[in-house]
Amino acid sequence: MSHPRHIAIIMDGNGRWAKKRMIPRTVGHVKGAATVRKVVQACVRAGVSHLSVFAFSTENWRRPPEEVRKLMDLIVQYLQKELRDLQESGIRLRVIGDRASLGPELCGWIERVEQVTQNNDRFHLTVAVNYGGQWDILQAMRRWQAERPDQCLDDLGPADLSAYLSTADLPDPDLLIRTGGEARVSNFMLWQMAYTEMFFTDVLWPDFSEAHLQKALHWYGQRVRRFGRTDEQVAAEMPAMAQRKA
Ligand code: IPE
Ligand code: IPE
Ligand code: MG
Image 1 (spheres, rainbow, N blue to C red):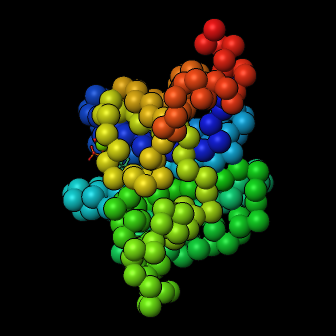
Image 2: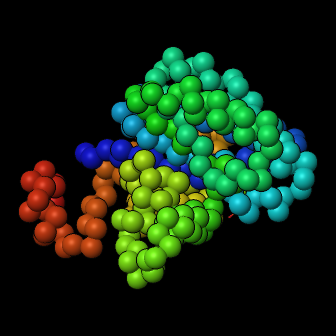
């Protein structure tokens, strides 16, 4: 059974988790942050090497200001609390997204954690903060062009653009998990997910557990990734798959 190298997660459902309990939405976010910690550990145990989590989208600024503030505070707290464990576990943390509108405290912590963990390579955790797939594609095109004022966009190919995305150092996600029951990508890694397998579950993010992760991994193992080719072509290249299909 094949295994994803890179899992991307849209952590959705914190608000509904809280609403069901008649407690403030922000309590759902606190519980959601604790789930991130557990899922990182579960991914390490499962032999996955890369995990990317969507923490705050470019559209989430539309939420009530108190909720936005709480989410930003929680991200700062996560970085502060986890730094030591990340370091001890050999985890490299990266933050992707537009930092221009993030506060100085958050930016300071992002820089600190990225710098301290930069030589770790046991596991790669990427946190998307003020991230949007559309933003990522545009900033990549702009940077590519800025470095080549004499070239025109006709010269820009997919690999050139990938090299300027905020995920340039990472493999594309093999598996996307979205909790919370919606089947949409909500502007996550649009370019990078061209061939990602997508697993949607009704489980609300604060309830997401190692057993749910295992279920997603099992589901992923059943997928045939054709990348545009036929089943027969794929089977010819992978004897194990040919056996399974027989
Ligand atoms: C996900 O949970 C967290 C963020 C988007 C930051 P939500 O807050 O979107 O939870 P629901 O969708 O309202 O239940
Ligand atoms: C997606 O969740 C963004 C994050 C998980 C950070 P949303 O709850 O913001 O998505 P929509 O608005 O329902 O699509
Ligand atoms: Mg939501």
